[in-house]
Image (cartoon, rainbow, N blue to C red):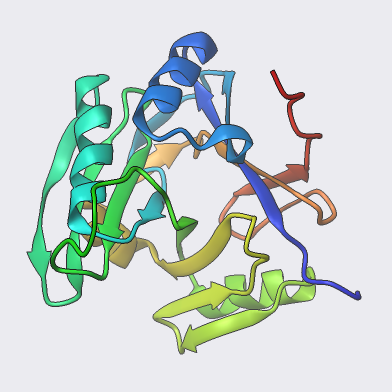
Length: 212
C-alpha cells in the first residue's frame, strides 16, 4: 500500500437524523467528518468509544461545550484544569460521548471555535490484538504504549484513530464500563469494509456532500 488509509467520517446511528444533524451543526460544525443516520439498534450502558475534539485553548473548550449543552447535551465531567491541560466531557442527546480538551491551561489569543483534531478513541478488550488488526489493514502506528494506548498515523484532513482499554476509556468518559448491544457508530474510510475484534464496523467512505 502506497499511502496510509484515512478515516474520512464518523457515522452515528441516532433516533432522528434531522435532529442529530441540527444538534451537531450547532454544537461543533464538523461538516462531512461527522454523519448521522436514523437507526435504533438496541444498546445499553457504555458503547465502548469516546469522540474527542482537540482545540487550542480553554475558551474554545468552553464555547464548544456550552453550545452542546445549550442544544441538549448533558455534562459528564465539568470542564476544568488538570496536569495535562483543560477539558470536559459531555453526552450528546443521541447518547454518544464527547471529550473536548486542550493541552493549554490558559488562553493565548481571542476566543475561537476552531477544532484542531477530531479523534476517535476506541475502548477495546485487547489493545495489542486490535492494534494488530488495524496494522494488518494498512494503518501505521504513530504512538504506542504497550497494552495501554495506541495512536495511528492519519492525514491532516482526516479523523484520527486511537485505542485504549475499555475500562480506561470508560473512566476517561466518567461512566461505568459495562454495556451491551450496538455501538451505534460506524466509520467511513478508504480501507476494505470490515469489522474489528470489538465489533466496530468500517464502511466504504462516502463522497463529500456537494457544496451549497
